[in-house]
Image 1 (cartoon, one colour):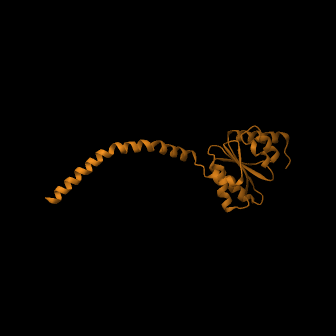
Image 2 (cartoon, rainbow, N blue to C red):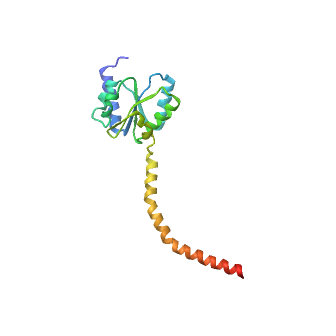
Image 3 (cartoon, helix red, strand yellow):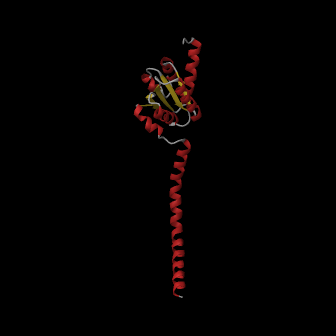
Length: 176
């Protein structure tokens, strides 16, 4: 399909805008997938809050210039689908990882996060990153642990006294 110059500029501006706001990118080769499988992947991406787009590599290189994903430009070879995670760094990686389990023809070519190019083997690591809610919960539990331990330490002498008095009471009741 022949694209006019205006259409190309629109695509570059759209992908560039998304890339500037995104936190991670997964580039995967989709050759061999059916239209139905790609439709399912895109539907899953919409539900997961992942921006997914098939873009010509030359247009993708131009769109990624000046963004934190410029490091991935040399890996843009062949028919690729780009998946950008907007809020959660691991969202696109989790989506692709789940899709690859049932569709082995989708091959991860490159990953990028925070100006770093990761090899395709890094998909598992990127997919295992906690979501924002999980990270906040982990942080809160770490912050809460010392306070909880301190309160338990302060309460222990009183609890020990109560247990001792209860044991004396039970011993006197048993002997009487």
